[in-house]
Length: 502
Image (cartoon, rainbow, N blue to C red):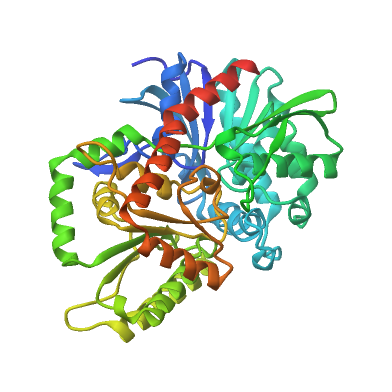
């Protein structure tokens, strides 16, 4: 195996490790994720485009000092994506709680998603947030070759670019936001706004899913720091549909600040369409489909996949489902709703409360409408394995994805990708999608809903259930073209082209 001390041309900095740790025969082994779908495999695919790559993540450890150093800081991994270094930061439970559970999730997350009423400043330990970001920067530059690209991901590492810039003037710094970026007035609620914006303006490239988020960042940079918009470009025609909540006709592509040029980009992350379709064609998937349809016994399946987070709108979707059964009693016994609401990490009280309310509403719906032969709602609080999820996507007449705010939402794209018919054409089906997801500006065949309006939510699910088969297929075909246009491979190609221009 190659020397792990050699520097890398591309260093990806992301909070999650790029493998699963398992104990086998008393030995700790690193296993590649079973599914090539999802953000971690997508990021790992970039290693195939460089001679040497590295990944920086954190790993929670018990104890301090020597106790925290009992594992290798840098390990060399070899899998189907290549051979690359993984540099792990040993963070104590206290550091993880402060940096991730409190500062990131209770202070930064609600502001990014425009929920200022959920913002909690009092519990924040900003010095620890700074310190963890500095540690990420030190680990990243230690892996970087001269002139390398250090690619940092997401808001919990907002300060890392600043520390990288101080340590290494030769590297190129790229940053990608997997979340929305709020309006300048909402962003300004953060008392650390100046420090955060200074760090982002230390980047050579700042990327977002859609033009609206890029424009929000540029507005904040201009209003708070006096950055100049050097160049704007029209949004791609496939992402510039007028009249949507997140419509944006054009957005800045270059900012000027203190003599430097900051490139700003908007390109949505895609899903692994060929893999999803390969899964859909497997005999095991088809057997699962048959079992699911037998369980449904002729009922129509509606499904919604998410996690226990107030931004995901699961509570509002469940209330809309309850109103549907009240409003159309003939549907009782004829429709089945499958909801996944994956519980958050232990110790995150705000999400426990969300989960408790979801379970209470679900219990009430089942209590009102269940019979010995029928339960109107299936609630799963653990993730359904992806291979099984594909079978459910293929059985679902409606996929109902209505977050109050979401950076993109890959579930909607997965549903569309899975609806290809094995003998050509598509299976039809309807996607009910919140206007406040980034994917809404791409998927022009979706039935869009405003989750803040009971009337619009009711109208959207009614329309989806009443949609004629031909219209379903026409809309699905349009969405499939979009999902194929912006798949995971397209995002990789686009991003590598941007790196080459820095």
